[in-house]
Length: 370
View 1 (spheres, helix red, strand yellow):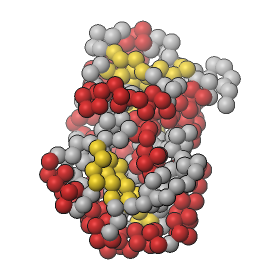
View 2 (tube, rainbow, N blue to C red; view 1 turned 90 degrees about the vertical axis):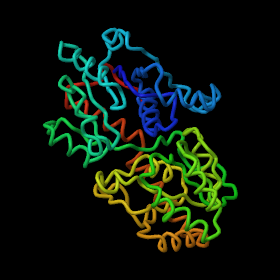
View 3 (cartoon, rainbow, N blue to C red; view 1 turned 30 degrees about the vertical axis):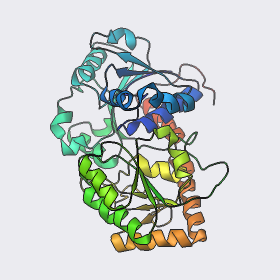
């Protein structure tokens, strides 16, 4: 089949967490023998910020580690009908402009033969529902939602059995343990500061525990305002700035453990959605300790695949145990890897997508190679 995916950016992961999952799924589809074309808007804020901060060199890791992938930039004057004329499946991500979402839906309503899906990987449906409700989805065949609680929002909006839960997952072709283990030291946290929506939680579950235990802590990410950098300095944190997502495995491989601190929207309003960072860490074989979130869909085995800290003191106990107990580290790594490899890789999600498409009568017109 031919897939056309409209993303905010395939090339840039600057403040664009969906890039990991998208790259992994599209690459898996290519390896199965499908044709894939990715479109991204000219002047997208993620790519513009990456190029402003790092120039073309900021794309080196993506280009080197995802040689199968490329994308085509388009403007407001693009001939959308021509762009999707021979596609069997068209997927439009929710970080696109309303005019684009509506225009592709209009093509489908007017008789285009592709299956058209809307892909939602964010909390806006609950945090800013008007931002999603402004999209004209009347021409779409279905919705891909990255968690059950988000899918339930679309069901209330009338989508019923045309909304499908499609969680993110790890690209295990790239995100895996190092081939050769080297000495590991301290903690690492990869994440963007955002809009202060978890600043208190970061102090409680990451900064203070690391400082109290004397564990070196390195942080990678963007959108850290001056007051955030001052906070990091006060706790003795080493701030490394932006990290190309494709290089995260090599950074994980240098550290003893990592911590997951979910944003409040995913704790309070969209429980059951862990976001990509949990999948990434477990796939890379690094012990993970998480601040509280409700695994309502049973994606993992909390306490076995990773540890959960209910408060600051429990976070300190868990981190101290990981530092001193090699058997605990090995157990967490083994169980975390098993969870990813058995059910949470981009290969699993590509297979799920193909199964979803069959419900719309969309199947491969030729036999696919593995």
